[in-house]
Length: 350
Image (spheres, rainbow, N blue to C red):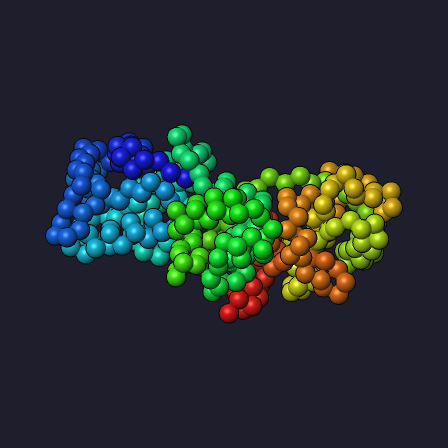
């Protein structure tokens, strides 16, 4: 998500005042330089008799590479000016961007209302909900269902180096689409060029951004009740019925995790299918209901769900990357299992 840096700097003062309305007598200076370090804005304000000073870097996007660059500049400035509290302002701070700010001990605020500011006795922490006007997002290009095949390929082999033709042969995507998506990934800092080949810049940055995108993705799904002795028996029934009719499927969330890394008891079976319309309700005596269901059908956003599925004792389960993202969609039920899957995932990538 981008906004021109000059426009962002011009708006930064209003954002500061909105997040800290109890401070008064604001004074802002732009392009403040100390020795060899220049920051975009320095600001000072008062509360009663106390003066609070801030040094601020404005970034046109809240992607990890932008946040790291701003954090490094602010750290240098604060080393020589310890009375200043460092802040990063961006159109929209990603979840990974927030983590990076926390690692550096730097505050942040954005135009959607996200803010975390700690300066002396001042502490502000808010969660934004609105997308800023005039912002352009790259996530739609990078993480749309088909385009995300590239992300999952890079994440599955993080140390590999890729030519675009190799990506094409592994994803089935056109060269034109790959070229556009890769250009955006380089622009956002997720991918870099090494010896004329493409390489993953940082696993955690891309992984976090993709998971965040998956958690926000709208799903077409239907809920059913199907009588079965237990969830595992229900999974076996569904697998046999769908396989017999050559309908593609892959279990996910707690049901899928139960076959990859058994961790906890579950009562709802979630499964991707290629089309909700093809589900054989009568063959399974399935009743479509809104409450008391034990089966959730999710229409797969892309055929890659089935291409990358893993076979666990004759039952198809989504790949571990997808499994982790799907478990995180329901943190109250799935977060512990998700963390267990993440350990398996990272162990397999070493």
